[in-house]
Image (spheres, rainbow over the protein chains, first blue to last red):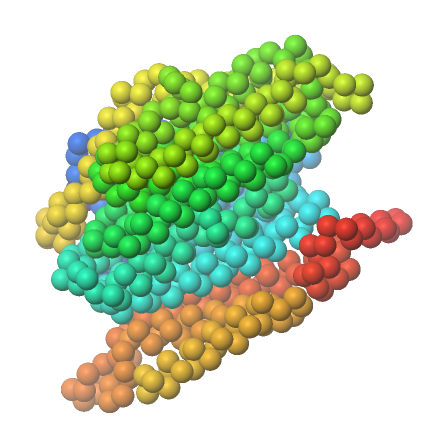
Length: 500
Length: 120
């Protein structure tokens, strides 16, 4: 179905960013504008989730040039879900950013750059063209480079270098892969690639292209052994921005893995899917071991992102419709939980003036709400029923056993136990044990109360996802069904039914 | 013509990777510049063999035209690559000012003491 509204997720953040830049100085009005824009984006994205449920995707052909000639923007159920999660995380990050700093001390560029970041993320979610996807990635990455160094300590700027170098290398590989895809399939449009791919079944060039794309998106998602850029660069970000990065950026990589391998490339690339599953298995263990070895909160949480990415990529590697639904469920759970854990980390860092586990303690008595929120989210991350993390893991493990991947399932279970262990490490150090003598506790700093409110809101959302698992599962299953319905997608995009 | 292009792309990639793996900032910078050029050339080469084809701008005889799409893609890629390389230059310059070194081994040497903060 053609709809001009598809452009809204791009226009809203982009126009907001430009207006914010023109206003220049930080002010209350600017905050209201940024907040209102994020809220509008949440509403629009939620509307798309409703509109695409058991309905054909919404399509906008730029300038009326239909696929395969023009660039198309497509919102199907999966895109709509991802847009909603991105909008919610961005809204929470904006609000948290307002709570963290008074108007005058906020860096004037932070807010517009967040909006540009959201533009790039949204473009990656709704594009139906491989080269346009490259452009979306670049918009997102360039905004993320700028945010990374914007407020970093002088001594920490060097951590931006591996981030930039590896992502630049990955982007170049992506450009090469897009070129190869054009050479092999004669088109960059997703539907046309899927249609032409059927005739190329078993062609070794397609398998090579699949491996190249696996490296590219594996790097963006943070899979072993391509994740080196992530765990040292995220802790240098200011709290709210770190939560947005942790929630969304790597998940864009996972989403693209799902989209490209699930819908676009031929489904018979068994070798590539096997590679993906094993990379994911190693990532789960390597990520969680890295987390156990760290001793400051944001360092632990940053490594955890990798471990969780492993679960999602593992489900994509299993390559069945049920496994895709599991991956989508896991993404929904993970974005909310991960962002709120980063929020908790920044809140305790504000109270203690440090997020080093050696200088924390006693918050269970001082700030019980924060403690409850952290405990719920940490247990959810570890996959304790009936919290949201359990259902995704359960589905992935069931599907793994059904397909006979015993070793990978075992790795997933071990990673789950180690996750619990490293979460308990934070829990013991920050909340449970009494504060030592050299621990600063600044409860008179009024900022932590609004922050706790925001985290509590995110936790409520995560509880709804977990306790209302049937509803979430319906959304995930429908998204997976639309994703694997290639014939329907090709017919819709190329069948001529979209012509005005 | 396609074989010469392939050789050139391979050569550019080889030199670029060699330079990126050095420890000195300037070499890494040149490595990334060459890398983006190699990628652009590769995308351009996806038009196919240009021998005996007209340029897609001027339509003269009935001769076949070169596929124009990769040229449009390369135009976008050049702009993006230029922007990111520009950012890389600034980042490396700032790291040089902050850390007083242009060597990666020194930069990520955990034992290295923080330089003295300057007065004023």
